[in-house]
Image (tube, rainbow, N blue to C red):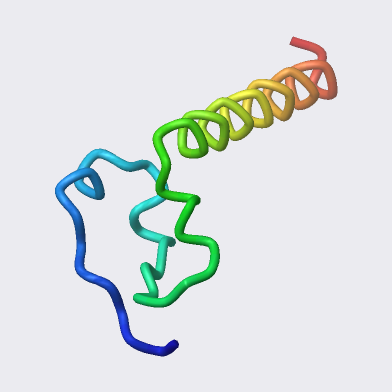
Amino acid sequence: FRERGETMPRCATCFEYPTCIRLRKCPFSAKCLPETVALAKTTLQDGMVSMYNAKKKLIGA
């Protein structure tokens, strides 16, 4: 369970790549499905926009 899996070509364009540990026998390997990655990206973007808007409101801009 501690062995790292190989980096796949799709890892080069994945925004989660730096934090993904790609364990060979990871039970959550479905995280690499395009649909899952797209959902995580959308969730992250929505969170960033929300934080930006909250900060903008706080400083009164």
